[in-house]
Amino acid sequence: MIPKDKVEELILRHDKLEKELSSGDIDKKNFASKSKEYSNLGSIISFARDYMKFDSEKKDLDQIIKDKKSENDILDMAKKDLEELDTKKKEYENKLKLFLLPKDEDDDKNAIVEIRAGTGGLEASLFCADLFKMYEKVCSKKKWKLEIISISKSEAGGFKEVIFSVSGDDIYSYLKYESGVHRVQRIPETETQGRVHTSAATVAVLPEAEEVDLDIRDADLRIDVFRAGGPGGQSVNTTDSAVRITHIPSGVVVSQQDEKSQHKNKAKALKILRSRVYEAEKLKKDQERSSNRRNQIGTGDRSERIRTYNFPQGRVTDHRINLTLYNLSEILEGKINDLIEPLIAEEETKKLAGVKYD
Image (cartoon, rainbow, N blue to C red; front, side):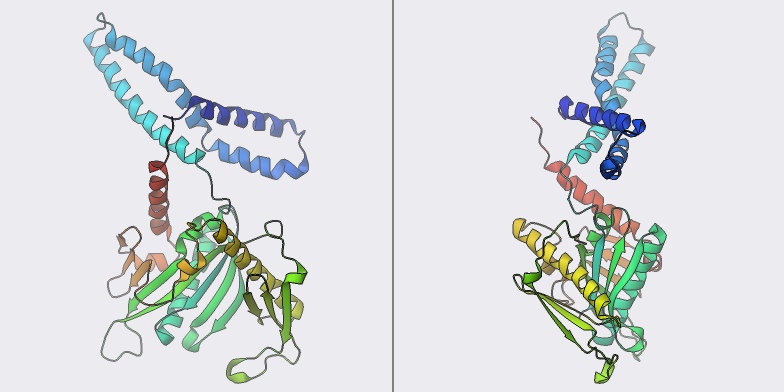
């Protein structure tokens, strides 16, 4: 059972914020954060208020049941109401427990997503492009902003690597479940004997670090500029516009040459570097963090995978929760909620199992 004082704190905090926000007498600097907190509390406040009434309602029903003068139909109705009340109380208690659980401080952040072709040659690079298109459609459906940071193309329209940022509401809390090795099984167009080939691509989802999250000193950076090169060694720029930034303490290196402007390449490289260093430092503090970048992307080998996309069967299997769906075409169109929501539910179940109240 959840201590009542914790539920009362939620109600009091909600009412206080409501009063502050409606009065208009609030610091502009705090308005956005308090509005968001009020909105979050709004999603649970009705359950909190009802939860506080359950004990008195149960007491009333118990009295009816114990009263020997109660008529049979009233007695039966009271027993039924009591059973429904107990069920509802457990449901509300779980909702409140989840709300009260410590939140991942990165869940509200935007994300940097890195997709790389793994084992499988050309077919792996084509699958890398397919995954990028899938996430493009996810962002479009959710009205999220996707911005390509860097892209390395291969033959036949495939990608060796693509890095992009996604911004909007609660991005990382949703996309973090995409981190890992994605495996594809399909018949390549060049396959003459109809054999199914297996390839892989790796996805790493990093919380986008802001300057306030991480203090990177200029003295800790080594910045090299060089002339950008295109396919086959040809020059794509006659000036030294490409940038390579090394974070000396961690050894993290990021290169960027997509833009013609050295200034823009430096800004993009810093954006990626800040997120990678931020993630690395968090990992030192919490080795159990599931978004460990090395664990996320693995080696790109076919045997390592979180999810398999089987084209001949139209099947998608998420190996983390043994979930199999036969709607591959819909998923590739960006409808990945059927995959993400069960993963969120599984994580919530595990968290609830570990909650103990005295």
